[in-house]
Length: 241
Image (cartoon, rainbow, N blue to C red; front, top):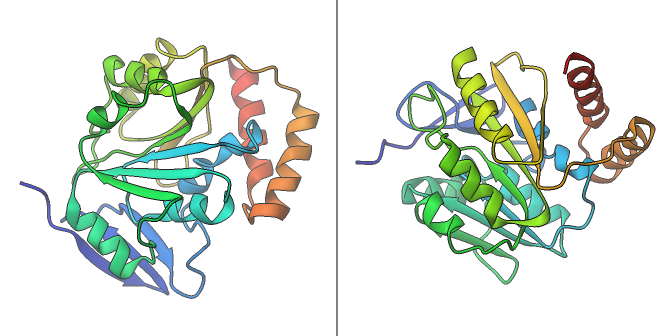
């Protein structure tokens, strides 16, 4: 049985929940196109490495923020989302301004693994944010799942994933990612306890001067105002590694 979808509002922000206090997505009512949550903006750090994706997929619809953002900002791309709970999709369409399906936007109500098995190395970008109502750990998190993600991506494809949970949850997911992809890096933990990781099918050649220049263009072009902090986070990760 699916957990119930509930909605709350606080200080001009509408939140989606799955029958618990845990936030599954958010939208600022007077600026719905903005990515409100920090970790959701971090999920877009793949833009530092790929400017013109052709296919973008989101596993776990949440409040539809990433799906809506990518549909608006990347008109050349087919944007897809996968959501198991049909009530989440209905809430996104009614209360979070997710547009109906069209030639560039498809939302699939199905299991994420079933979707991945049909992709045949065709996705440029995969954004993963799969959580159940209690949000103690990702709903899918073993190595078999991350290997399925890897196989669904093109040879140059990238994955970003939200990891919320204990240090043990972070560690086992990062370990599974590292065993599935050519290279993996991650951001410092946010104040909400999220860690966002980025995984590469091909290990990138990183020039931090170029990444900062790219971050400045991202901030100006797509209103992702903390893009330079992503580069700071990658630099800090490399210094620790």
